[in-house]
Amino acid sequence: MVRKLQGNRRRRAIKLATNMLNPVLFTSHLPRRLTTSWRGINQIAVNKESEYVYLRVPKAANSTILHLLYQHGSKDAFGNPPKRYITEQWMSDMTTLSFRDGLRARREFTFFTFVRSPYSRVLSAFRNKFSSHVYLYKYSKKIDKYRGADDSDFKSFLIYLKNGGLYKDQHWMPQVSFMWPTVGRVDFVGKVESLDRDMRTLLRKLYGDDYAVDHESISSIRKGPPVTDSSNAIDEFYDKECRLIVQELYRADFEQFGYSV
Image (cartoon, rainbow, N blue to C red; front, side):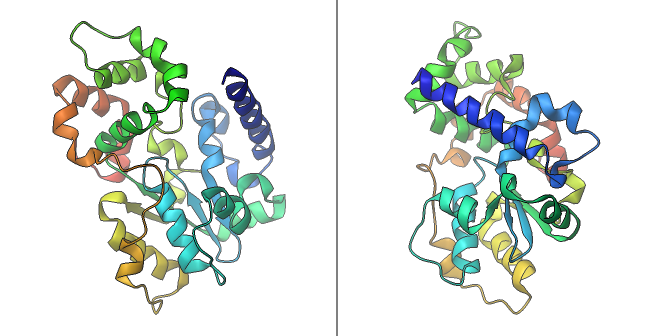
């Protein structure tokens, strides 16, 4: 398991070095942000044929949205291909773009993303990822350092995030960290809470106002890890201290994407 984690770190480092050469990622504030948010670089997927850039936010219906884009945008869509096939073969991973293609994408393509309430997103990340032995192995001891006598597992996790863990994993990083090159460059921001409506709006934006989107084809697709139903479990997991921590850590998400604290 340790060897696997080390291999993943090496692959991420190689990807980072490659991505740094791509003009889509060149921003005046990149060096300053690099130490905290470079993981967001590898969440950028490009469709050169349809001319769009999807800034993929983990724990914000990412897998479902990818499959919806594939089913509605591919001329020869087949079955339920794995997410990696969609992002790296049907679409382009940012590392594969040439300088010329990357520059054209940054200037001309439609940039979009989908976001989620910070309360339910960080809870979903906690409930989903810490059911995995890999995450328990990697983070349990670090989180236990901040565990008070009466603290829940979730509160201990939030306190760990507050004490340096916020940018240690892409699944709970602030969503603004994935907005490349800046939030202002994003042409369309959809929300998980209104996924059906916003996805239909996006598809018409990408393929024209006359593009027919069947309601069933949106609602029936659900991909990704098991549903945690975190939106309906907020009252169960959050006390006042937990809410204040999330408000502090994800302040930019609340403000930039219009979520109420």
